[in-house]
Every structure is written in structure tokens, then in C-alpha cells.
Length: 347
Image: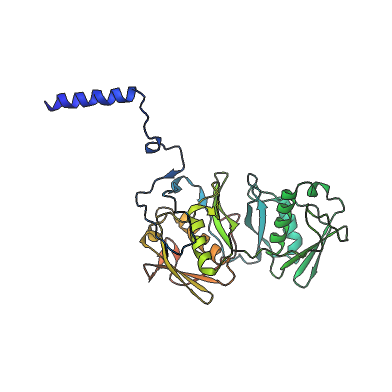
């Protein structure tokens, strides 16, 4: 009797399938790089006052498919120095990617920066013009550009990208905070499209969320993206939201990678002087549990992002209000400062 009922049920299923009745594709779709997390926990610090309008998506990166992440570095080998070079991403040139190259100590680090911007790193290049001379005045470098800048002035977006590549790369050199340009030794109102040489350029100090980028399926890089600068408490909430969703303001940056899994919740935080304490739930300790490199990516992303805020110099991570000894190979027992060298060219 039982077998007869089973056979009738089996015939019924076959008929339904043959009839073409649609089946929810998401139930079986493995073509995307995302999966639905069974624990859809999301914790709002203050749901009534929170500035975050969108819930955290109930998904996270299928991180096992991601290439290797190489952690930040704080020290250099003897006789070496680190140059942080900023290159536009080929696919999304508005993404300026910092890459650290270690070179022998030199008395001309600014000229060395220009040389290596031309040379490129990790398959990235910055199409900066030939620069005839560099002068240093206190904390400012004066960059002498050639008289012919036509190709650099034809497109405003391209001009801005090249300008930012130069400014951020040159000011990464210790002691340099400002950049001024001259064209053929003179002032000009026709600089990289819409700029004037009368402007003294400095790095934008707006807070930045450091999100992941799958670079040519070879390695994951961290990319800084500006977020709105609002009162500190809201900026902290916005930062966590961006790191979990790759959404900044009302824009979803779908080509980038969230660095904090969606089930990791920020319970609360405390800002004491220059120290920021972030108190996460237990899911933090299980993040990327079988990928030590991606655990380092998450920690680096948190440190770089929050120390990009003016009044934060170090971050202490807690879990359920308790100090954390470690995560993978990372010591979390003490407050951590901003890493010095991001995306080192090699491990």
C-alpha cells in the first residue's frame, strides 16, 4: 500500500515538472558569488535614531572563491623604504588603489614615486605626464609639468584621476603634505581639465571605507571609498554599514567586496579620546574561520576605515563587551593603530 502511494506521488511530481510550472530559481542558483546566510541576524545600535535606512542584505560573499589577501605591513626591511603608490583601476578608474612597493632607501623619494607611477605595479599604471622638475619647499612639493598638456586636459574625469594619483602618491612621502603644480614654470588655469595651478592640493581628509576588490582573480586589494562626514556617532554606524554592504550613501558599489560578513553585528561602540572601542557579537569570532588571510582583510579594513576619521587613532575590538585575545593569527588583546603600508606588492 505504501509503495503504491509513493508511486502515485512520484508520478504527480513528474507531471508537475513536465507542465512547465516555474520553480524559484534562487533555491538552486549557484551561478552567483553569494549565498543566503541561514543566520540572518542583524543588530541595530539604535533602530529609531539610526541614520541607516537600508537593512543589511541577507547575504555575504562566498569567500572560498576569493583569491588571496596579503595583509598590511608596519615594518620595512633594513635599508628599504615603502612607497605607497595610487593607481586607477582599469575597469573603474574612479577607484584609486593604493599599492605599497618597497625600494632601497633613496635621497630622492619624490622622484622615485614618479618613476614607479610610470612603471606601474600589479598590472596597474598611472598615465601621469612627464615631469621635468620637482622642488620642495617646507612641506610642499612643486611639480613642474610640460607645456603640452593637451591629452591630459581633454577629459575632465581622466584629468581628475591623474591629478589625484599624483597628489595622493606624493603626499604619502613622509614630510610632504601639499602639492602645487606649474606648467612650463608658470601659472595656468588649464590644468588637468578643470583645475588651476593657483590651487594648493592636499589629500582629502574625508573618512573612507576600505572595501575589497577582486583584482584579476589574483588577489584581493583594499580600496578606499569616501563616505559622508557627519557627526562621529553616525559616521561610525555608516562605516560599519558600508563595510557590510558595499553601499555608500545611496549608491551600491557592486563591483567591490564587503569586508565584514552580514551576520557580524556591532552591538555598540565607545569613543574615548582618540580610542574607538567596537563591541561585536559572537559571530565576529567565526568570520572567515577557515581563511586567515580574509580575517586579516577584515581587521585591516576596520583599522584603515576608522582611523581615516580625524579624531580616531586606534581601535580596540571587543566581543560581547569582553576583550578578544586573537582572531586567527592577529593579536587583538591591545588597541591597534592604523597600518602603515596597505596592499604590499608582495608578501
